[in-house]
Amino acid sequence: MSDTIVTHPLVVGEVGPGCKKVDPIVVADNVTRTFGGLTAVDVAHVEIPRGAITALIGPNGAGKTTFFNLLTGFDKPNTGDWSFEGHSLARVPAFRVARKGMVRTFQLTKSLGRLSVLQNMLLGATKQPGENMFTALVKPLWRKREEEITAKAEELLARFSLDAKSDDYAASLSGGQRKLLEMARALMSDPVLVMLDEPMAGVNPALTQSLLGHIKQLKEEGMSVLFVEHDMHMVRHISDWVIVMAEGKVVAEGPPDTVMRDQAVIDAYLGAHHDTDLGEMTGANPVVEAKEAAAKVAAKKEGTV
Amino acid sequence: MDWGQIFTNAAGELLSPVTAAYALAAIGISVHFGYAGLLNFGQAGFMAIGAYAFVVPILSFDAPLWLAFLSAILASVLFAFLLGVPTLRLRADYLAIVTIASAEIVRYVVSTTGLTAVTGGATGLSGFNSGFTAINPFPDGVYGFGPWTYTENQLWIRVFGWSLVILASILVFLLMRSPWGRVVKGIREDEDAVRSLGKNIYAYKMQALILGGVLGSLAGVIYVLPRAVQPTNYGTTLTFFIWTMLLLGGAATVFGPIIGAMIFATLLTLSDSILRGLISADIITFISGTQAGQIRFMIIGAVLMLLVIFRPQGIFGNKKELSFNV
Ligand SMILES: Nc1ncnc2c1ncn2[C@@H]1O[C@H](COP(=O)(O)OP(=O)(O)OP(=O)(O)O)[C@@H](O)[C@H]1O
Ligand SMILES: [Mg+2]
Image 1 (cartoon, rainbow over the protein chains, first blue to last red):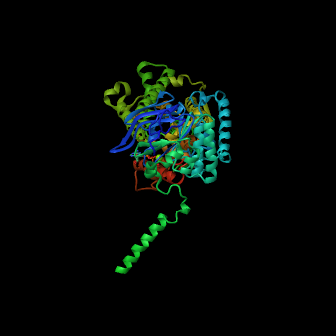
Image 2 (cartoon, helix red, strand yellow; image 1 turned 60 degrees about the horizontal axis):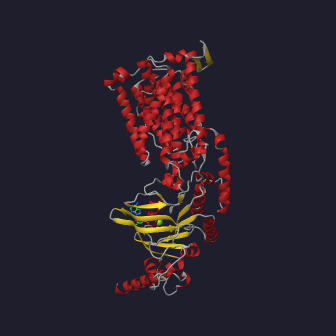
Image 3 (tube, rainbow over the protein chains, first blue to last red; image 1 turned 90 degrees about the vertical axis):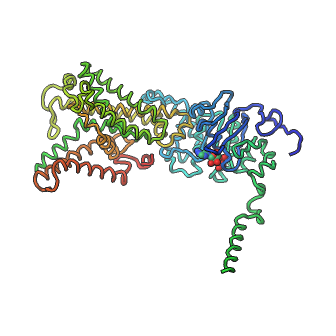
C-alpha cells in the first residue's frame, strides 16, 4: 500500500490491524489461547464496530472459531480481557454472555434434532417464566408469553422459509436448513450482537441471496453482526468491515475492497486467482494440471519397464 | 404344579406395593435419563437413602410420620446435590460412574456393624410400620376380588403407593410439557446449543437430578412400608431392574415406567414360580431351586439386551425422540 494515511468513517485515526473504532461494541486486548504447543489465538488488540456488519476471514486453522469460542465463553483463554458494550466479559460463563445479548451460532450446526423446529425456536426466546421449575407447573403463568414467542417464532420461520417444517423434528432438516434454523433461533432473543460462524456453508445460492438480505436487515434493525465466512463474494457484498486473521493474529483490517487488494491478505489467504471465476481459469486448473502430471508419470513408468 | 396359584400370584404382583415402588423409582430414572439425559446408575442408592432416612427417625427419635417423610425427601435432595456438584459440569459418563459407586457406598455404610445401633447393621430395621397403619382410613374388612383380595392394611399401602405413582406421573407430565421441560430435553441432546441460548445448564441438570432422586427416595419409602428394611436389597441388581423396567416401557413417556414396572414385576414372579414348580414336579432335574433364582437374572439380562437392540424406544416410546445415542 502507499504511504498516504488511510481513514474510514468507522475508524478513529488510521486504518490498520487493531485500529480504534468510533463506536466499538467489543474491545479485546491481549487474548491468547494455546493448545499444547500451538498458539491458536494471539490477538493483541481488536475492536468490533457497533451497528455494522463485520466479516472475520482467514485461512483454515487461523483461529477464527477459537476466537469466537473465547468471546462467547465457550472456551477459556490463557490470557486476555475483553468487553462487550463496556462491560468486561472475560471468563463469564457462556449462558450469561448470551443473556447479555451476544448470541452466536456454531460452525458445526447444533440444531436439536429431537425437538421440533418450532420447539427449537421457542428455546431461543428469553423471559419465559415457564422455564422456572415451579412456575412451569402452572400453565396460566406462562401461557401468554408462550403465545407471544410462538407468534414471533412463526414470523422468523417464515422469513427463513422454514414455516412449512415447523412441526417436523429438526433431525429431518437438511444441512442447509439446519444452518437457517440455528440462525433464526439465535434471533429469537433479540440479540445486540449476532455472531455467525460460517452461516452460508451449505446453503444454496438462491437462498444465499435472501439470507444476505436477512443479515442486512439485522443491521437495519439496529443489531451488530460479526460473521466468519470463506465465501468472498458474500464478504464483499454485505460487510462494512473486514478483519483478517492468520495464525491466530489479526493481520489486516479495513473496508472490503481495500482489504482484498492488500498483498499480505492475498498471499496469506485469497491466492493469486481469487478474482477470476473458476470457469475462466483454463490455464491454471489444478485438477487438469494434476491429471496431466499423473499421466506423465504413468507414461515414464511404462517406458522404463 | 398348581397353575392357578402361579397365575394368581403373578396377577397379585401387578398392584403390589413393591411394583408401585419400582414404578416410582422408574419414573425417577425417566426424569434423569429419558428427559434430561443424565445417566444415574445409582437409583438403588436413592431408594436406600429414602428408606433409611424414613425409618431411622421413627425408630431412633420417635418422629411422627410426616417428619419421617420430610426427612426422606431432604436426605435425597442432599444426596443428589452431593453427587451433582462435582459431576454435572463434566461429561455424562462421570455422573454414571459416581452414582454407581455412591449407591454401593450407601449400602456398605448402612450395613457396617459400627452403625448397628442406628441402622441395624446387616440385619436391617423393622417394627416401624405401626404409625402408617394407625392412619389407615379404611375400616377393618376384606376388600377386592380374586388375586386382588386385600385386608384393610394391604389395601391402604396399595392405595397410598399407587396414589404417589399417579401424582408423580402428573407432576412429570406437567413439567415436561412446559418450557422447563423443553430446556431439559434440549440439554439431553446438546448442552452447548442450549447454553448458547442463555440457559444455565448446570442449574437445570441439578434440578432434574434432584427431582428424579426424590422420586427414587419416595420409592424407597413405599418399598419398605409394608415390611422391614434389608440392606442387601439395595444392590446394583435393584438399579438394573429399574432400568430394565424403564427401557421396557419406554423412557421419556408418561406410562412407560408404570407399565414397564408392572410387566417386569409380573414376569419376575411368574418365571420364578414356573421354574420352581417345574423343579418340584421333577420335570426339570438338572438345576436346584436356588439356581433357578439365578437363571431368572440371566433371562432378564438377555431381555434387556434384546430390548436395547430391537426396540430401544420401549413399548410406548417414540423412536424419533429417543434412541440410545445420548
Ligand atoms: N480443542 C482443540 N484442541 C486442540 N487444538 C485445537 C482445538 N481447537 C482448535 N484447535 C487448533 O487451533 C487452530 C485454530 O482452529 P480454529 O477452529 O479456530 O480455526 P478456524 O479459523 O475456525 O478454521 P476454519 O476456517 O477451518 O473453521 C487450529 O490449528 C486447530 O487445530
Ligand atoms: Mg472455524
